[in-house]
Length: 146
Image (cartoon, rainbow, N blue to C red; front, side, top):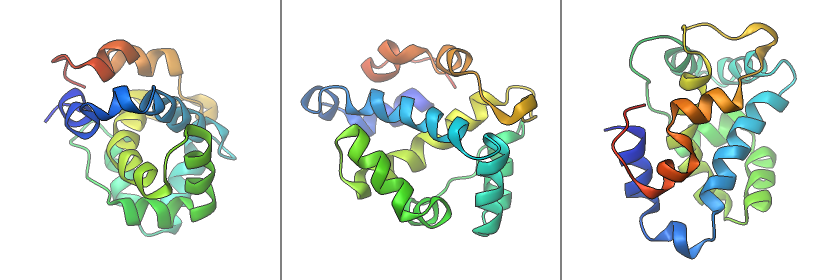
């Protein structure tokens, strides 16, 4: 299933009802990565410390992304981080962890196009959005593969 298919099934009519909260969540996911101490390297370290090193490495590498559950993601990031993101985008923490579990692997994958963490650990948000098809098509449907 492509990222667009995944997001389309997750968001459906909900995206219109929530006034762009999902677009904010995607932006917040990229901000989350870049604002970690050490950027993406810091996020990778958090996942390793949470026992999810193989999962996050699959997102960076060129192979298939391994899934992460909302609970695993919340444990790795910490409930304070998830709650902060939830407050920022106007959603419930359990919704945010569920959606982040779907979106974050694609964000990290798109931010590491050569299977390597960018120098400085910062992902290029414009490049990620371009890879993911842009916000308009991302949340409006479409068939671009991520």
